[in-house]
Length: 448
Ligand SMILES: Nc1ncnc2c1ncn2[C@@H]1O[C@H](COP(=O)(O)OP(=O)(O)OP(=O)(O)O)[C@@H](O)[C@H]1O
Ligand SMILES: [Mg+2]
Picture 1 (spheres, rainbow, N blue to C red):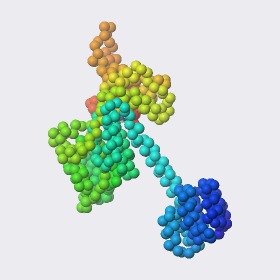
Picture 2 (picture 1 turned 90 degrees about the vertical axis):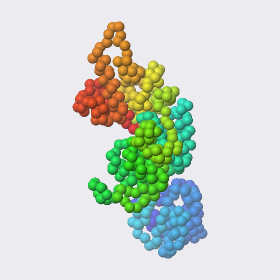
Picture 3 (picture 1 turned 90 degrees about the horizontal axis):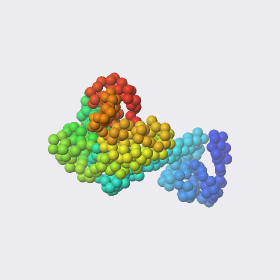
């Protein structure tokens, strides 16, 4: 039987070694690394189960498939309990055994890939990926580390581009729910019914367009975290439903009659002043107090310029890899300008500036000329400068203002051109023409 199996498997392309009993098998296992062990349950001297245990002790990842002549389920069950991958009852077909081996190998590879992906994710969401050694950022990071270990809900406050989502991910992936899903939704970007359906799901036929049952994000995020971005823009009717999830840990799908229980960590974020929204009647105070248990306030970048050199260094290293550049750093005058700049769009805007400079520059040190004009002007528009003795070129000055406003509109709308055009009250064609005139990239540079 052993020779026959060895012969057939070899013929099918496997590398096969045989051993006539458990002791010899264990010797082989300690001398080399094998993927699969195929063993009888009943053998002279050492039983298959004992071999299984000892083999697992030598190499825990090894796949063990048991063969048994008696259709004795007992020993098979025992073997499975001890960690056997599967068992076969004799007589069997060679195709069957090959299929089991193949499946086992594939499954193990998937497991390894999965582990590797998780490892990468862990690296990307590690606290070390959040840059900041200034006092305000240290305070934030301390708090982030502390809350991530708990299951508490968190509210992240901060201006646009200050790193709210980065922090949310770090909290999830360093917390007790890290093996569960992390789902994010922008509560300000969807019309009311759609948002409700996205969050809570719906039953078929509950509204026009509900063509089938659909799970909501709260269900999908079960045993993980849900990131409610722009929570301040959530319509009031949905706020009531969110409050219920927070209080009762349950909700209903649209059109559903059953209460669904959820265990989800809620991480909310906003760039709005929620207290003000409460005072205006646009945000429910009970929901605010529920969310505000652990607020994390991200400082705007202009309040911790000491972190700018660190951030610049971090982005350059990361962008070197993605842009295939060999940039070494930033000249001192450019760095001084970066540190003085008001950064309305915070870290995201700074990252975009650096990416744009790196994409355009061919030198290995970025200097002031590589950067956008706005940086050279320290965020000022030419109109805030006085007219020099020898006069200035009006057309050129207007052009500069125009370019700055175009870039500002793009930054403010995350480079969604249509939206930027709308904000500047020009039609899309004219907007595109102006971008081209100023040589502005039409792709958002800091896509992340
Ligand atoms: N402290 C930091 N260290 C490293 N990268 C950062 C830091 N803060 C922000 N970033 C980067 O800046 C970009 C913007 O961050 P993020 O998307 O988290 O901001 P946000 O507050 O959610 O912005 P918005 O309000 O526009 O949605 C991301 O690419 C993020 O990785
Ligand atoms: Mg965000």
